Amino acid sequence: MVCAAVVGGSAGAPASAELGKPEKEDLTFGFIKLTDMVPLAIAYEKGYFEDEGLYVKLEAQANWKVLLDGVIDGQLDGAHMLAGQPLAAYIGFGTKAPIVTPFSMDLNGNGITVSNDVWKEMKKSLPMKDGKPVHPIKADYLKPVVQKYKEAGKPFKMGVVFPVSTHNYEMRYWLAAGGLHPGYYAPHKGDINGTIDADVFISVTPPPQMPATMEAGTIYGYCVGEPWNQQAVFKGIGVPVITDYEIWKDNPEKVFGLHEDFAKKYPNTTTRIVKALIRAGKWLDEKNNANRMEAVKIISKPQYVGADAEVIANSMTGTFEYEKGDKRPVPDFNVFFRYHATYPYYSDAVWYLTQMRRWGQISEYKPDSWYLDVAKKVYRTDIYRQAAEALIAEGKMSASEFPAFDKETGFRPPQTEFIDGVAFDGRKPNHYLEQFKIGLKGKTKL
Image 1 (spheres, rainbow, N blue to C red):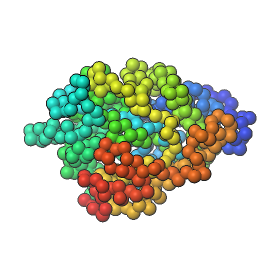
Image 2: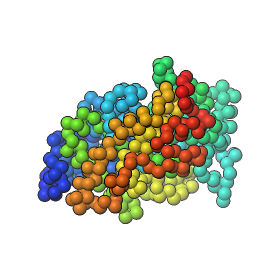
Image 3: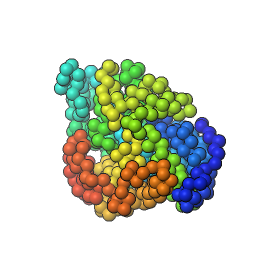
Image 4: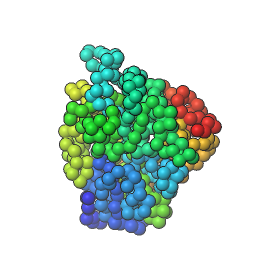
């Protein structure tokens, strides 16, 4: 647990005075031991929470469900969350609760790792250049390995961190793009395993336990955030085959989530939290990632991620190591501010909802208007805008660093840089779903 004794606030800053004092000053936030919790650590360590008059404790949580339950029952005032968690909670897949997010924490940051035995088989058919595999590596090369397991009567098992995690949807996206069915959910029938019709059987494991679970042979690969892919390389137990940047360039990753009742009861506190986190995101990316090594040293401490700085630095400082010794530049593996990474775009929310529908977590057809309505209720661009405008008024940041709020619609332009080349327009979720060969669409119901 990390505690901050906070002094003062932002007295004297005109915009903060207009914003009003925080209604609640003593706060406890939860996080999971992953490198992308770093905006919380930086906001704490650099005094950005203090600048807003907030006394913050940061507490590591055992897993994503415990973390979500903590926010729902009020033990936590907010938390580092999977982007899908507020959306799933809002629509009632799993525990139903009005969780909202006014802040996106980062872009990218995940990878898919396979065991050494699986890698050995995949490598036999991979195209090579200068003695190294050509990336991105598609799941097409995993397909014959899965077939061998199937013929031997062995289910091919892989791990993700939570049923509504980015990792689950990225793993499923990668597998399906290579012609492997990752399985359906059918919650209306009480089936929440997600393995109906599956070629690959996906199960849940907490992030820090992924390498050990694979080493034990319980799973043959996994999708997780850092440093748990790089740890597999360092331990010599597996090989990361693809990053999520290669599956969907600049995909939205974690968010900061809190209960809707908290945001209503403590509006000034909520906006001030977002102000502090925006400043943390900027610090992490400014001067071409110049502060990243300092950030690595901070989060390597046991109260944060608690992994070797060398392992964390492998991805946090603009590189990514695939096979041992095959380290390549990936400057945008972790993005915390540039490309408007912190703005909670409605279209990001819609993408997650489309994946919930594609794999059956949303079991019935929904019109396009439903996706937009849910996105607007959960992704609180209004709070973000208020925080950003306060920072601009205080002179801490400039308007050019944010979306043009007067023109902003909440939708990114249609995105095309997916591994399967399928274009995504957040305004047309059902049209998007119609383009996939594998996955539910239209009025199909299991």
